[in-house]
Length: 335
Length: 286
Image 1 (cartoon, rainbow over the protein chains, first blue to last red):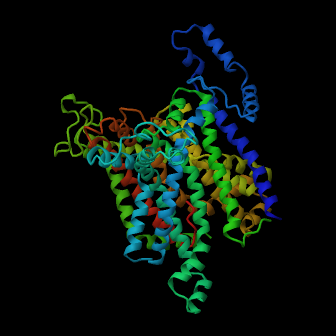
Image 2 (spheres, rainbow over the protein chains, first blue to last red):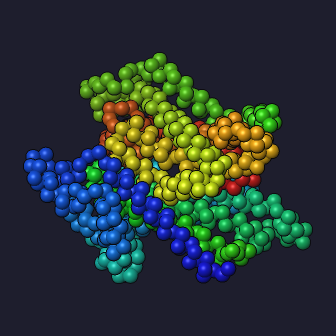
Image 3 (cartoon, rainbow over the protein chains, first blue to last red):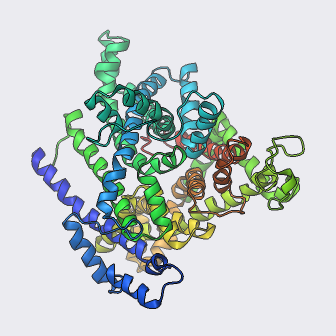
């Protein structure tokens, strides 16, 4: 079976998963014990007004009808209207998504660029000082509450040393909107001030968000490199007279990278969700604030929209990981 | 079968005793459990009594972790907080483990449509980022500790269901299971008497490995405001209120956060050691 039909099959297999995901989110947001219409109308509104709002948002219809309507609108790219902001949810999400995407991407890149070499190093120097230090670092990384790390960094570098910029995405005006990613937009418009400012603002949040990912990548890279280094073909390569570097780069790394790539892909999706905490602490204007406020006010079209987008990103990240296997490891066949 | 299992367990326990990391982990966990059990004797004052004269006092011998914005002793609150975090962790894992094991064993042993339905439902829950699903569930159920427990159990059972299912499938073809089936033992009897006892130890180990992650997730939920609410002395909720006073009182969010960190690292150290011992070649996909 060739790659194309594998691709098609994998994408088709996504449909039931996505349907299930939508169903679960729909059920969760409709078991809400409160009454969003009452909440929106305010405590003094008459029953008539509340009833009108229910009709406006279709809340008076049976739940399966509401689900059908939601699915039908979804196929047209319509995520409904936020009860709180009274804007289309899709437009709200488009506004907040780039900030989250920028922070997450920078963090994943940072974690991978540092994590893979550290993990390999740890494996090569197994049971020596470097390995012990890296292992201690990585176990603290997976055990550290993200919000605590963020608060500590803020406390030290912003409040005490005063070398970090104040929380937020940028100081002064944002660069002209092209993609919504400030770093990219600043480069595209040649706006140096905005470029430096947006990078400076990214430093603490991306360290916070990437810490956990870094620890996970280090652990994976270490254990998979260790496993490969014990294989017969590495012994053969050594027997041929090869030493150190060629073995590591030509023989070991290519074979050990696959599980690490898997973890990076999974983490990318996880961080899109994990960014919530980081965004709250650093006042980052991403999807987190929108999600938290919509969940607290029972604004269920917004809750569904934001959960759906993040989960979709998570599912797609997993798919991309699967698809990338074939390029990295030519032994993998799709049948 | 049972005897072999026990001797394996004994050998593993011996290796755990030799590992330094495991020992540190066990030490930390023991300490936290002792603090939780002996909280009324350790805490110098009540975790909820306010004293507005002493608000936001920096750490001192009288208040080793300082006081909060209502003059409560943060050390006492952190001490009592250990009870809440341990309780959440243990109940979530116990609930998730019982539901997940039951469904996983039934699916794996029955096979066919039952298996497909159970595993599809499990996969559906696994396709969400855990924190997002936990937030959505806790928000719609209402923010309090009981609902955090419920939400986390709903998220956690599929992990155990998968593991239980794979054990059940490998046991399904074993002679003693086939024999039990052949002499007419009922479906649930075979599961209870033959499949369950032989899959229980890896499940229990998996469960204990994840206590740290559960505690961390629960604290994070409370920090964002979807879990324990003030004045409950829950670590995440305390760090969350402390965040507002961080300019004046660095100690306020710092010590509750430190407590979470130490607890989670204890469980993770032990978990790592156990994983190394049981399966050195296992790829740690976690």
